[in-house]
Length: 251
Image (cartoon, rainbow, N blue to C red; front, side, top):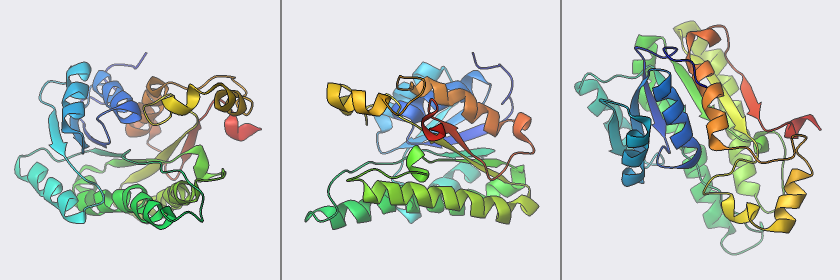
């Protein structure tokens, strides 16, 4: 249960909000009282998220976070409409798996880093003036692969390691300007990105062997941590990457 009122009076921008983790975080923030701005390449998915959240006055924008000009344009649009933000959730991301020596590896590398690393940079760079004005907060969505590696995912693991270091670097740099920067490192979460793998018995068994809680997480289980980090309850928390992983990183 998300405590009501924790984010009252705040406006949160969530990228990748058209499904999965981004949708769950958006719904949780709306339950806590935040006004939503949802951005995704999947604009229809964002509208569905907004409906599910019951967020009156929420806004939806089609956005490719890897395109710096689009991010700057969105920041300008929100400012001109009087909808500047208090919280930025950099959730948009992709996972492209494959052996490092395959012909498509270079394409996977470029696209993954463009979305998963350049995307958060582009959004923070574009919205930094608004966040400084509001003494706001940034939440970067990392992964357990910010800390550990798995085969056939060099690009993804590298990108999420970069998100961890970006979070720490900007926490140190932006604290004097009143901006908190934290992250969430989801473990094995049942989303459209992972559901196909989790349906394979051998894959599911191998994954659950590493999780003390012996189950995958649900997207809704990321909402509470996100609301906490965005709220004044976390007023002295910055530079943290909170693992939400059923204990995966503990063993």
